[in-house]
Length: 467
Ligand SMILES: *Cc1c(COP(=O)(O)O)cnc(C)c1O
Image (tube, rainbow, N blue to C red; front, side, top):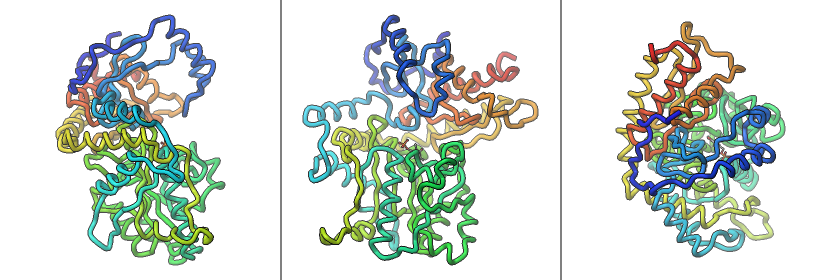
């Protein structure tokens, strides 16, 4: 089936002549090897391996378009699981990576340094959110590899900080229902999605999980004084299904933390780097956290890299004589990887050179209109939640508007169907997710919404299409 032409035009102009594709023989061989050996994340592998279809093997990309081994083009509707920012094969990022490859791909940050990591640390401090005093500026950057380790690092810093300064009563972390902070054991204990985290809840940090800021404000004095840090996805919870916090919530959490001497650790792994229309989501409410956790979009979606930013106050608690054991005992093999840091520096340069943030309001506006029109037309689109270039659409039963039975995996069926209309994305149960790369054109964004609407109508039957 031909991909719908309307979401394919490549507005970025940096497409190569044509994308390389695989041969049919190599594709069949790859499919066999995949099903024999490759265990995919968050994937029911029985369905995967027993499917009569070959896995979709992507071989190249340009801008917001990905091309499969058979030469078919797709719009990257969820930014390659929320990572891609300026598109695939962006010339500035590609060139920066090639140049760095000509020098050095990796060296340790344990005992040595490297230029891209040094420059990126300084640059992140420059672009970090700022607020007038008493807000303390974010001045120190610790590199890790993934979103999970960025949050893990913040929690370890917070925990070791309290120990270093003798505040040993502050052992409690506060997180929220529906939260997703990653999959390592420590941060999984903060998570509020039972299917992901239930098994591990008891084995990580001491966590108090709340549903809303009102519950935080209602904590009794004794509990409040035991809080080390509040950990939060600002403005929108991604894995919860793009659940948007009420306006002002973030500000109230910051004020509560200030009043009670607790840290605020913000997980901007998904929201960072322009997704919400600003570089960081916390800027919408003028909030500066004590820990800012960045990953996914940090390298423009090219390479795994994460950063945890914190204040001079936190940093200085770890200073002392070698024998005092105040060192931050934590780190990973690829901390400050030069190649990944070069990609991140180039991505930040693209934000400036191409005035990316200035281009967003028009795209976000077009996205809103397209989504609202689709919701009004399509009886299977229920609640719609959008912030910036992030959207979640709940699929519902057409006539009654009731939720679907999640065991039917309708969201997954709709997204599979959407491939035939040239769109790649992945649902969260029966919430459809669209998160176009920031480089997408308005026409591509509108085309993606249309593709999803068509797919929903085809899977769920009798709808606006063809009637
Ligand atoms: C993806 C995500 C994480 C985990 O990041 P990984 O790189 O997958 O470890 C944490 N928090 C949020 C909000 C995320 O979206």
